[in-house]
Amino acid sequence: MTPRTMSPEREATVTTTPGSVTNSIAQSVSPPPLLTVLLIAGNVRERAQRTLRSILDQDIASQIVVMFYDRAQRPARDLPELNLPNVVYEVVDPRSNLGLLQKRAVFATSTEVIAFIEEHVLVPPGWARESLRLHAEGYAGVSGIFTAGNPRYRFSRILFSITYGSYMVSEQGGATIDIPGDNSSFIRSRIAKFEHELEPLLDSDTLLIRRLSAGGESLYRAANLTLTHWNENVFFDGWRALFLWNQMYICNCLTVDDWSLPRRVLRFLATPLVPFARALKSYRRARVNRADMKQFFAELPVSFLYHVASALGMAAGLLFGYLDSRRKFADCETNARRDD
Image (cartoon, rainbow, N blue to C red; front, side, top):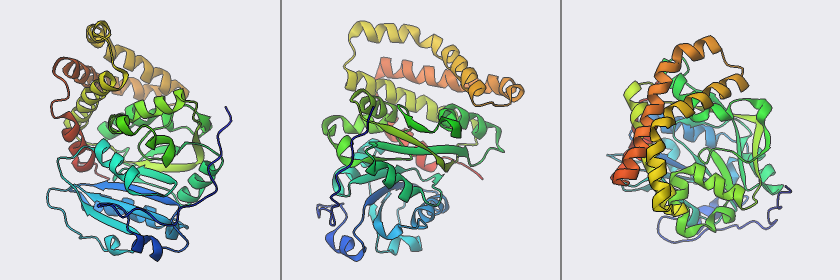
């Protein structure tokens, strides 16, 4: 599949609608910004600051606009980096879900490329420049290789293998059909076209990646970019996050893909098989990743319990709908403990 090249035109200003990057800010950044990075922060300010610094330390930081959405319970412009001219600080509703905020950012800026970086991730030096280079070649979505930020904790190590195990081997870099939606960058127009479905697609980012791939868009995993990701190090925090994500995910599947009643019933009846199917997938992934198989089997009981959480989340979604899973999952993402 040949990637479509990105338009050579670069927009020097951004819209002035409420919550967007203003013209005055765009004019203060010289040369004009080429990349918008969305960072959604919660109550753990030091963690968000660490991520923000890794973005601002990029060698082309003058061409980056950072949109800092603060959904903390007590939001405050309490970090010195928030006063920089290319950082746009905005207080948002702490009850808002991530997909809603990400969609808002997509339409609040006019740079040709937008990236969604979680507040518990570090981007490496050269990340922005290399991502833009690959987008200029026509790749709609670009990500990198991931490494665990806190592997000394058993639960965070297991959670990392579940959530990012598919993206941790540099040999798997190159053109692909599978990248994470979070901690990736996108040609904005390629995802903005899903306007009416964009919120659920972003909330369950695997659905966005499937939609892009099905539409013939090219994706790329850069083997020379290693992003560091911190996972929850308390067992129940991880269990709850997987339950809520899968509850939200299955509801988004019903909405986006318009599942028929028979398909919903069959999927519900199959939920008891989910932990076994995912355990088998984890085993195969561990072999591909050349993981320590002795450690894999020692950690398999805990991993299986996490897969049970995923299955129960799906069942809850099929039976009861979203409930408050979107907000609660956003709370998990921005507020859960992820100790170093």
